[in-house]
Image 1 (cartoon, rainbow, N blue to C red):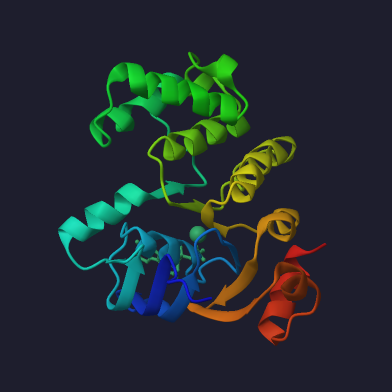
Image 2: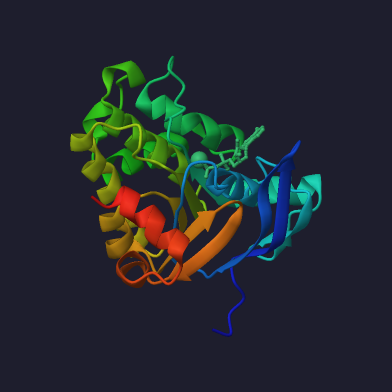
Length: 245
Ligand code: ADP
Ligand code: MG
């Protein structure tokens, strides 16, 4: 591809005291690509995602997002506005309705009028399939519904990139699909996505590439079908034998 990658990660290292969470990670993600990251607990998956929008500061290497290097406060703020993130825990404001959760950041960060923010918020609740929950508080919603509100809230900022960190792993099994369906739609609309998830069905349906991380490194990268059925590396085989039943 001649086009410049929308995310460029170059030899990134991150230490927490004696722990080297990232030991030289390089990754290019192109516009519209969906990349799924798998790997054992503690392998650095969350740290890598958090470095992309600088929730975590890295020690070495470089990350460039949509042409903007993450190297000054001004640039970091600019990048954060373009990158949405969805976490395992939904992180909604519990004292606000679903709609209010979607309105707040639009007014603060995007400086939208309340009327405009409200219309966008409502349309996004339609998009994630729960317009009837606009006036419900998070406690009145199921986990799957809360996560869909969290996705809608991230989308309300018109991100160019969406990062998902184990978005379905806190959910009861019957709610996983409704969240993955929203993510699959987003992928099909052309959103650039980096997704930490062990949902192989989603990866096969939505991802261009799947990566295995272990020990702070990307060990192997391939099309999801190839990585899951015919991995090259022993560590990938070993990991898959634990998660594929
Ligand atoms: P994963 O998401 O793959 O489970 P993480 O990126 O959360 O892995 O963690 C990678 C390594 O960095 C682990 O050894 C973890 O204990 C360590 N780590 C992550 N965040 C912190 C932190 N804030 N302080 C200290 N150690 C951390
Ligand atoms: Mg993690």
